Amino acid sequence: MQTTFNDIVEDFISNKIGISANFLSIDLAKKLKGNLNDLLNHQKLKNAGIGNLVDFQNDKLIRNDSIYWLDRSHNNKFENEFLDLIDTFVTFLNETCYTGITSYEFHYALFPIGSFYRKHIDQFKNDDSRQFSMIFYLNADWNIGDGGELNVFHESCTQSITPTNCKAVFFKSNELAHEVLETLVPRMSITGWLKRN
Ligand code: OGA
Ligand code: MN
Image (cartoon, rainbow, N blue to C red):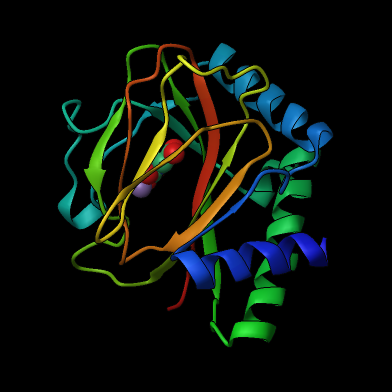
């Protein structure tokens, strides 16, 4: 795991965005996808909003994915396995890069067929606690032509990232604008933010 952590951080330092094709094991990705399907079947997924509680708009023109927040109080074995991995990564990051991360928040996300998330930045205007964004993809059979690519806007180019199974992306929440292109298949992920309070 240390090699994976090291690689994604090195990639981030060189390119403003760290990408690791196999951050999650196939086994863990499968279990988390199973959780997401269970949440869908039990109607636990909620329409996602934009902004935070102080400035909340639920705007279907900007995003139309559905989400569910992870929490250790769910006592879900697979969810906890994922959060254990995040804990280890945060410890690594704080020790190697002095990032001072004190907490985090992660949600499952389902982008149904035809959904998207327009260009945005993850840090809120009235709250700078979100330091780093991380997204983990759970799409076991994603193919070219399925859509749902993550576009990241750099100063001089736009980088297109495919949402393939087990991949993680990692970038500064106040820096890189990004968008999710319309997906032509159901698109699953876990997205979250490492925070400093
Ligand atoms: C987000 C986001 C990107 C993705 O949820 O803020 O930008 O690839 N997600 O799912
Ligand atoms: Mn985002």
